[in-house]
Length: 294
Image (cartoon, rainbow, N blue to C red; front, side):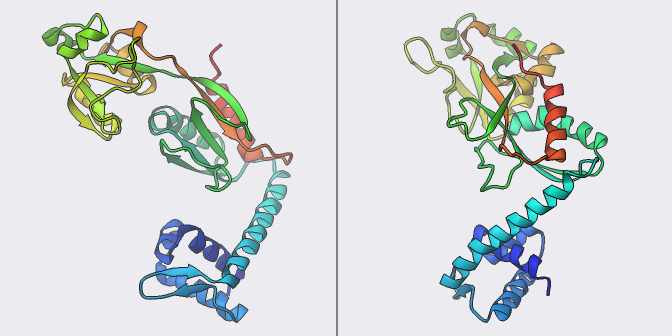
């Protein structure tokens, strides 16, 4: 029995809420997850997980064991990082969180170049527009836009998050170029399903929503971009997504003086007095490639 692995599996079961969810998280079968739990229960001679046909819950003994397991696993990670700090070559796993558009368009290509430079590092890039908790969600680094809130972490600025309003030349030739927000009432908007039929980030001086009619909506920014490139309407999306198309003339910026103020973008990570070669190498690489705009 691999007791350490069994403890990892047990912690995953408690945190994920079920054997099947833990299996998906760990990349093993639910049957194997169950075997690890059974081995632990046999070793400890107590039930850790109460199971019924409909649900499962952590026993009192299991809850206590869970907290101690987390401490043990953290101590092991600390020991590993201590050894890692003595190694000249960064190695091991890094987990990075980033917003979907920034992550796919900007961060992912940089990470590919970083990995080529540091072949002993493995990296997981998790893209989500939801804010993660670095500790609870197990991330080494996160890219965050806007207000940082309470600064219980280290934050390094890497530029600005700017929205762009654009349309293709063929669309503007057919429908005309809007010269003021009021003109948008005669145009077709391409909106994200999260927003519904509005562009909530754009607010007029009297706090009214821009008069846009949504002709096409999607839950995917790349789908909206393709629709804009093919003349379906006016798009409002981050500059990182549209920059190449603007530079190539495939999309034309509109109403620039009415766009919302750009939001700051930061790399955030937890403060730590211990040397962390792999994280330090990634930070140095990204900060060199993405210097903060003055």
